[in-house]
Length: 348
Length: 281
Image 1 (cartoon, each protein chain N blue to C red):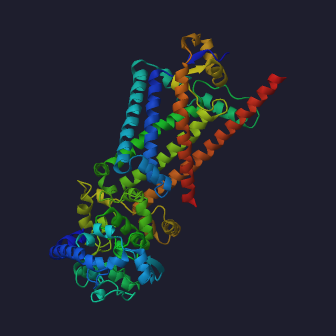
Image 2 (cartoon, chains in turn blue, red; image 1 turned 90 degrees about the vertical axis):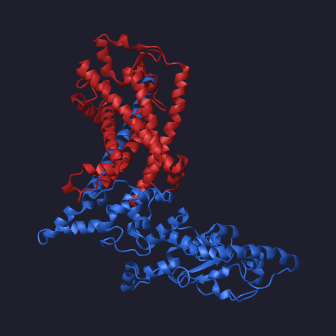
Image 3 (cartoon, rainbow over the protein chains, first blue to last red; image 1 turned 180 degrees about the vertical axis):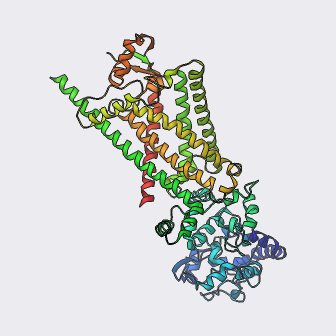
């Protein structure tokens, strides 16, 4: 949602200017293309696309594929340098008539072939300083730095933005999705889930996530950011966070009209399939003589009651099907035996 | 004892109820199970086939209402017969679906028969496993209806939770677990145990038409439900149940509808069992 405001609000002025520039560039391209085989100066998108749209052309000058090392994970990837103009035109930046050099600023003065290793695109300094600043100050970044992890950069979460770098970018380079687009929402689930693995698993096992896991990620199905927020995200135990007691009723009420204090007590990330939960449960139960607080904690945890029903059903399923399965098999076997006996008697 | 003498076993009312239950049950399973096994490729495919979001959900709710209506009409019929027509035999005795001492005898007799220690017991009108299936269907329908309604209207449902329990009882999550595992239980039970018991045993394969045409042959009646047959003869009621043989078309129709449904059910339950085993590993 913050992204949406940004992209629509901050770039309105740019859009008008770029719209005119685009028309002029189209006209000039038409005129110039009559006289020149290769136009001069890498300022227009068409200049870049002369090579980057055409695998053969790109191959003549350099390579259509390039090896790069992911700065966060350190993985070596082979990425495509081919740009799908149609896909770019439908993307958020492409629709606003951005130029390649608007982001790849270090190519502004270059002509023809260029240095193969470009600078990393800086989203924050000139354009997206607003969420970037609040993101840098967020609890998420602070906590990660404290614990010695390197926090994700813009492109770490907005994977589709890293045109040539993502798995998705490999297939459709330059395709930058909208914040509200189902594809982008699907990607953010997996991006959060890359680190928050247990939360992703419990999300997929519960109401909202089971539909999302089937591939439905339109705005009707909440993803991580819809409940927890995005750039200025706080830990859900913090009362000021989106999932804090103060804000929960409002956040849940966006979809569930009439949500009240009781409704927002819902456990969206049940721990009934976590091994850690059972380990702590057993240790709390075993040490209840020395540490009676532990037992109280178990009694107050809604997960305990979910676990009882869950384990009960697993037991019921196992018992029922082992018994009735055996019963069916034996009946089937005996009927065949009886039939045979009957036939033998007939022959006699 | 011949294959050409037929006796009425199920009235049109019960056959219609069973037919509507089949339709709604398949609708419920085919739109519900993809949500449980969302990580499997077949689940995504099936979900799309059933209309995806939100169509599959609408089909699920429509079928749920249909199931509930059938069960409601059944209970209405039952209470009318017991309360107004004073048919006490529906509650207890040979005609009742409530288990009685004879069933315990049959279970023990069956165990002897399984190990070749005795002949097959002569069952009554309702065999003990048919009673278990009937009672679990009734109980399951109530459980699924209550948990399903909580999931359908979560905001309204939590208002029924008393205040002091609201901190520790998460009603929608409980309802989801109950609805999911009761659903798996019902689907796998119907698609394997019920299918085997009624349709796939060597005597019946591929389709037992009794529930669709309402008629059983004299041979089946004596062979399967000897005690009931003896009672009907003794009470001189057998001729009242005598029926015309089912038409060729009706018999063909049973197989035309029954066999594909059997195959769908068996395939879906195979996929579900595989999915459950994958979860364990």
